[in-house]
Length: 396
Ligand code: PLP
Image 1 (cartoon, rainbow, N blue to C red):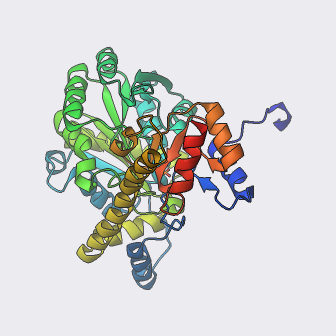
Image 2 (image 1 turned 60 degrees about the horizontal axis):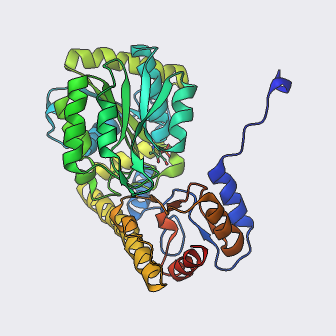
């Protein structure tokens, strides 16, 4: 049976990482993989995670099955983190959450859940969006279509076109929105743009699916959840997929959450039973370790504060890198305007160069980024920014 298969193309980002590792250039720079790095280029374990890990090892008493919902305490704390403790939807008991294997697991569960609601649903994603969204939703059997989002020429949002497209989407479909730190463009909706999108959502009646993979990496934990909170207050139903990979640095623990907001408590129970059935049929139960760490941190005021402090360090570093690159480009005589990089948010921005220039940066300067010129901003540091800016100036 396997002989009928044709090989799939290698994942472009992982392929880039292999090339980077084999490169012996002393000043090589990796701007490919989307993980946070400290100034030394290392992705550390957060101190609060280390402390939580110690506490758990001492108090853990069993490894027995956890059940399809995962940890109830994690689920509750994650909903409060996303929606805020006193959100009307929480108080009205309209929210149900399951722990999932990462944000990717949350998205897959959401996709299967959507299929149970409407097997013919179309899911609309931003153009562009995180590369895995399309494959993931199509693999679950949904039809994926795009709405206009990022303008590569002006480096801004195509907001008017986005609004026009959303106004054509009907109530049986789903629209995926990035809560913050849009991947790959770094271009987020402003609060007033969110308000407009939310009012169109309520008017059209389609179901919003918000992907929040970077809560706390943009402007702050509460600020980044603006769209999530306002949306949940304004519409009857929505889905939220969260990830703890970046903001807790728990990448390989695979922990995230899939949350549904229903019209009322009874409808939430029915939807939840379907969500649990979906989980049972994919992986039965989520991993428990990452959830145990997150609930230990969020449930302990001191540890939570320590986490918020470490999160602030990561956010400030990324925002600082953005400013630093823009200044260094100017210092190196680049006349083209790159100030948009400092205005965008989160882990990524498009540098805005063509694939040939991306290739030249790789071949001649050992600077690695994906062909679209999406840069992982955390890969920039005080130590490499001069070389990076000079190299960009050369290829321009
Ligand atoms: N959604 C977006 C927009 C992402 O960028 C990512 C990860 O890069 C994910 C979801 C999935 O995150 P996880 O690693 O938790 O599966």
